[in-house]
Amino acid sequence: MHPDACISSGCPFVYAYEAWGHTFMGCLQKIFDVEIDLDLLEAAARTREGFGAVKARRAPLPMCRTEISACYEHRLDGAGCRNPEFHEVLESRPTFRVFARPE
Image 1: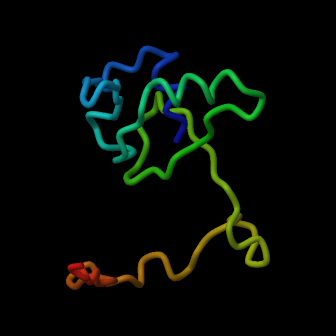
Image 2: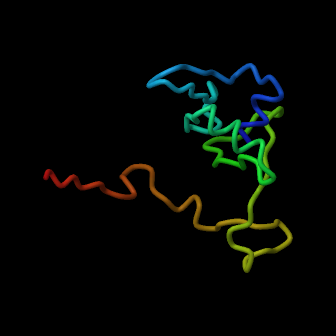
């Protein structure tokens, strides 16, 4: 998912807000669920590498610019790159725990 493409294409689901002296942008449809500092996104977009992609959290809309990055290239087959364990994670219980250590 390419957030800079969302802005340049004028996607109607892009939102922005100001907080702590910065402007942050995100997606109302939660295709990606991070909020990005707009100044950092624009600065990175001006470089040769660009800002890059963020992980899509749900199926992209038809107007979304997306790409698939291979993560299990040794598992390539006719269907392409895929993670066969993707649907094995149980959503009924947390997959990790966070422990706070008060100082």
